[in-house]
Amino acid sequence: MKKASSLSELGFDAGDASSGFFRPVSDSSSSAADGVVVTPSAHRRRLTKVSVIGAGNVGMAIAQTILTRDLADEIALVDALPDKLRGEMLDLQHAAAFLPRTRLVSDTDMSVTRGSDLAIVTAGARQIPGETRLNLLQRNVALFRKIVPALAEQSPDALLLVVSNPVDVLTYVAWKLSGFPASRVIGSGTNLDSSRFRFLLAEHLDVNAQDVQAYMVGEHGDSSVAVWSSVSVAGMPVLKSLQQSHSSFDEEALEGIRRAVVDSAYEVISLKGYTSWAIGYSVASLAASLLRDQRRIHPVSVLARGFHGIPDENDVFLSLPARLGRAGVQGVAEMELTEEEAKRLRRSAKTLWENCQLLGL
Ligand SMILES: NC(=O)C1=CN([C@@H]2O[C@H](COP(=O)(O)OP(=O)(O)OC[C@H]3O[C@@H](n4cnc5c(N)ncnc54)[C@H](O)[C@@H]3O)[C@@H](O)[C@H]2O)C=CC1
Ligand SMILES: CC(=O)C(=O)O
Image (cartoon, rainbow, N blue to C red; front, side, top):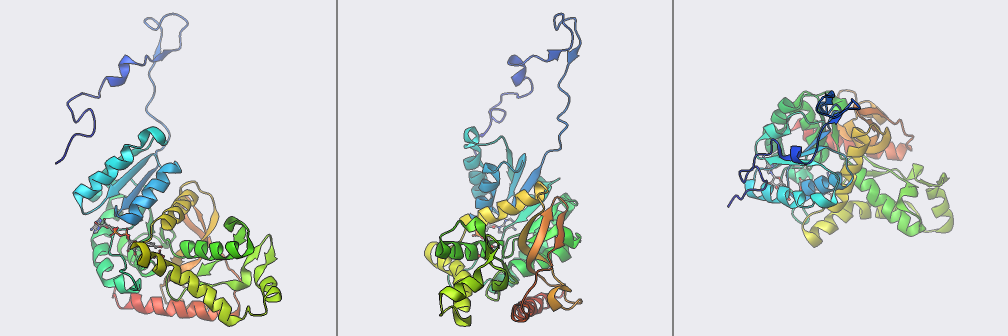
């Protein structure tokens, strides 16, 4: 049953509601009646609009984190399930008294996203316990064929941020279907995996994870690459120090830690059915860097042809450290990799590119 959620839906005209409380200022020292009334001009600051497509576990974790971080003036939610969608919107609206002022709108129709600065796509199937991300490809590509062209039509100048899995291949799909330049199509990629890596190292070294510089690159998934050669804390190389203090810190141990990072998503999925909080914070940090033109470096999925020996003719998207700002991807760091790391990255690129080619886009 749909109930009214605003006073105007209950029949109260909002038109003059605030005039009973507020009187315009006058620039004359005499009374407002004979002075020049200065009517507040239309709001001049350009408002920031973020759309979240898919109001499931991940979409709602992202929306609520963006809300609490005050990153948008308006958030539009889209989902295929109207009741769930309205329920989620109302639940967030009811927190208005505790949050920065943000207009929340929702609809099953993509027109609600019109004029977005940033569109975040989280719609789609998720893994069941033990299932790989790549296994979701066919189901989610079919969905993207519906969602992405409609989104691009409503917001031709938006930044497009893909979160649905398999995120690297779907970022390629979104790039193809939107017709946007590659600088405006980004996948959340290994921003999350890198946080998991930093968390594990921070626990071991007993420091704050924010002070651990460490990147996972390549696929957001099984073939991701831990860039051990550049892991540092306070400018000190961590690998060398760990190898000096633990004789057992060999190749096998390094692979064990990389595998633990990869398996952490599988573990959360097997325990609670899905992952949500960490990806919510991860994507909100990307939204902040993009919308506030922060020029921060994040490992995200970008068009990677030509980097680290990835062939120029392979339009593969995978994660590399990228500088993010209001225009999107403003350059990819030419990070130094060991020959072994570069080889693993190319292997990851090959797996992803083979999946992209199957789509015939
Ligand atoms: N890139 C990353 O690091 C992560 C990606 N994910 C991925 O995010 C996606 C979503 O995961 P959850 O939110 O847990 O799933 P969920 O099942 O809770 O939510 C998916 C939502 O998409 C909606 N949807 C389906 N078709 C739609 C359409 N045509 N238009 C609009 N909405 C539509 C569904 O109604 C549902 O509410 C999955 O593909 C999952 O694998 C999840 C966690 C991390
Ligand atoms: C589900 C997923 O992609 C993650 O949590 O890493």
